[in-house]
Length: 345
Image 1: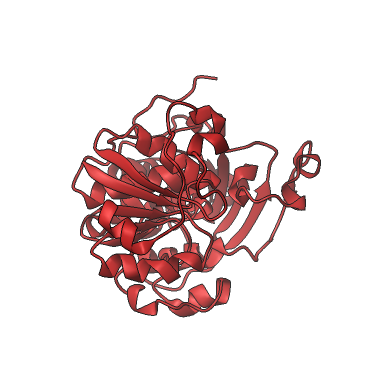
Image 2 (image 1 turned 90 degrees about the vertical axis):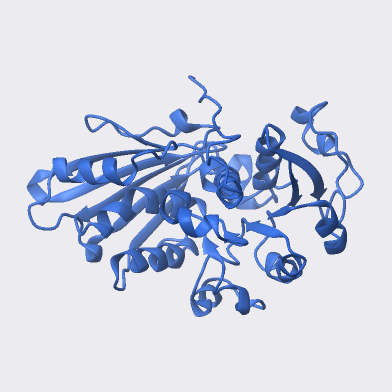
């Protein structure tokens, strides 16, 4: 059995990790940490887990964690993981980090979007954990930077087409909508019920911290610098993400070429579902699952591809993908522990 620790178990992504790992047939949860709730049983914080996860939360002690866990999931605010992960790696533990601290190869990009990086030496070996794209590298990694939710929803539909040269990288516009849980569990005015309900608004327009993350990966795939226009929106639902991407087609590329590219790239990828006949993905269809649903339509008059995706921001956009990364790191089938059926309604 794989002994797993979750650092930051009471945030939304951390709690989702606990939920998924509790049902994983190859995992035993040995450590759950919380800065705020140390000494309190997990199910006291999340009553839905009453009688299911009763383990007591504890403060993070690196020596104790290294003794009791084989893998550590760090579901902590940015900056904290870079302070503790070097010690975990030195202690021989594998790590999947759900913050942005180890998603970038270029430390300057990270520091422009976030803050100074104190563990630059690990950025060169950290692997970007987009499972369907970098599976081989993930399988050899001891440190994986789990992608952000918006980048997951953008990169999965776009990477195959950009790699194949079917879309013009200079024309990419991304319009994405996220449920409120993407903002985290800490209370704030902008996510207060009265501020969010019956409201639909854009935020951090062309200034979101996930934009440089997406651009770094897209540039790597395209083999040249790629800059996108990115507009995120907040919608009044607890979880879910729907993304629409606009890009000009290259040459004579049409519907058949786009579909064949996506089908061939994702052949055998259990968590990618391609919608038929232009049907738009629906966030409700992937709620609570590790699926990414992808659809597309071609605006023929303008030679423009309209590419759409839907994910659960807490699962495929966070905890589910983290577990998928763990599976790859241990040589397991990447679907283990992640194959629960979607909710029909």
